[in-house]
Image 1 (cartoon, rainbow, N blue to C red):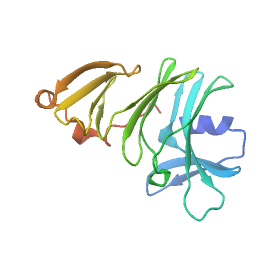
Image 2 (image 1 turned 60 degrees about the vertical axis):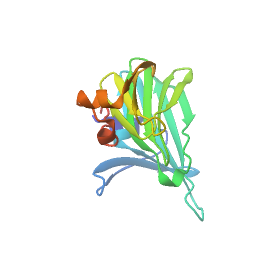
Image 3 (image 1 turned 90 degrees about the vertical axis):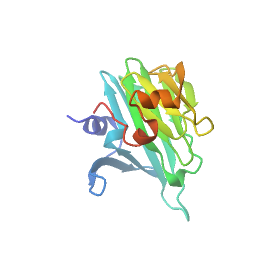
Image 4 (image 1 turned 135 degrees about the vertical axis):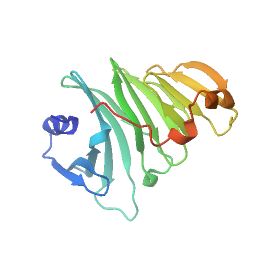
Length: 191
């Protein structure tokens, strides 16, 4: 069973599972005070733990006012309910990574201006780092180049988001890693 189907079974509202053909993605949705949607690649499951990104659309508004939330369960208990910061929510929230590393949830997302890397435990948000516009996600590392420091590349550990090292951009290029080419192609999930 796919992760989105597992999630659909535990949502406490009647949900609709449908396909967005243009994106070739399945989505579950339901109506509460808002229309709430979850896309299939924005669900992460590891054993008894499940995490997802919710998009909350208002029932009626003159302009689009979308709220984004990261939620997570461990067994039957909600352990994370976090409002995702987006400078201008109408531009969306693109998930590069939503993945459990044992008991740590890593969420990397792009909003209108920047890319953020966050990690959570059952106590909530632990760390949030602005990693700007050029990233590469490897198995246990996040490599990024910030627009304010174009000559440097920073390498963070996953899941802790601790700085491992900073290297000159030219040195990283000589090793065959190009954060600027991998930015939006490198999201993956453990579906």
